[in-house]
Length: 282
Image 1: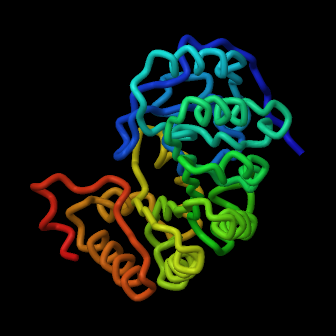
Image 2 (image 1 turned 45 degrees about the vertical axis):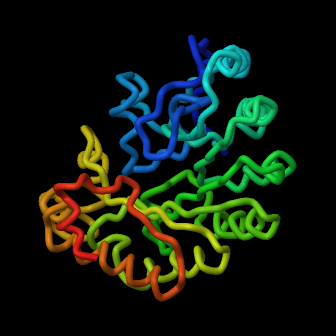
């Protein structure tokens, strides 16, 4: 049962320039995400204090997003559109409103390539569009153990995501897995990493991985959870997750090794700058 508050709002534009690798534009039909994941850094990016304070329980619905998208598509140069770069485009309200669906129909009609990222099997509703090509779908898989339920309190279960991933792959849709965020002593064990890499292999999905990003507010959101995992872990996490740390080099090496064993194409979410490349030690 949902306990979120929904607020309808108007947007000035639908497509925003994207700073993410491989994406020209970002499209997010909703602001705020009902999944309420503890590690999410989106609240710090949106610049909306009310939304940040009620992350997971306040959702702003861009009711005119499809109309604005059509205006944008008539003017914009064709480029890859990331759908769900800040909030999940298939959160529960989408089942009733279909804003994401309407946007995908327009993107398909204007022949823009689309990359979708979600945690929800609701994406299967739009299989008729996804089969047409120019679409790829990525599922975030943080953990396949009990940690996932605590970190992602209102998101669909990892099992449901894996089943949806398998369904899409079996229909010939290009799929990928986002493995992350990786949090020390939480989801960095070989059993968890191996399970997710094997899922990528069995569905012929590529894999993108990333460490926990400590944007403003993230560590505080996670503090109680981390202290239950291991005393003083919250204080250790910033050091462990530094790109220069031996810990992070070891984790990256472990993921890369598992992917080589399974024949999975694998890359970091944010490729290192040239001056950092020697630190990865692949």
